[in-house]
Image (cartoon, rainbow, N blue to C red):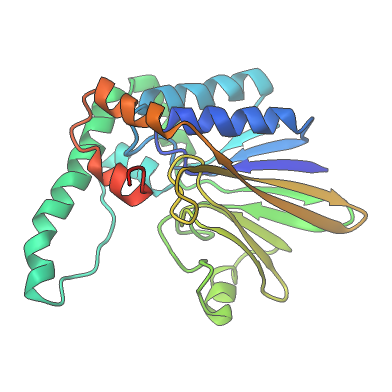
Length: 258
């Protein structure tokens, strides 16, 4: 069995097409998973949602499975990420500017997408995916952690105890997620925890489009976490072309300049 997993496209159509071309070059897959955060913050939110919808229609829902992430939820119901309270005066003074850029980018994204796109995001909220790999066992897919699309409990530097607790109420052998924008492959004993990174907004490998290729054969799992360079200048040009009102939120965090 072969599985392709992509996550965290974040409105970066150039990176998505780069990753998708690589997926296609790797031959046939039994399943393809998209683990959420399709649109927010990047310059081409509507095009990314529509491309995902188009691919799902072409390939079929049984093979091409899509779930939502926390930023997809923000676009649907207006919630915003939880941020820690300021611990000093300097941090406090920066809160308004930080929140303004974030909220401007999210509100602009909502203005760009169609009602059909919005309905699609509503349908994929809170979902998880799973498969049974013959000879290997159950494999589950989620955004942050099972049951929580915003949790950072599964990161490369999370303690083993905290990481195992994040998977405690699910049954399986391998857990695959996104959200942190960091590639990860950890042996937690009863679980192997994988993060496929981010297609459109990698923090661990800036300027790379990341995805994961999984092969299950004879009771073993081979994991290929793939980082691919994409045309960063084209993305910067996209921000200018669409007159994005808060591009620095994406550009600074993604280290697209300098």
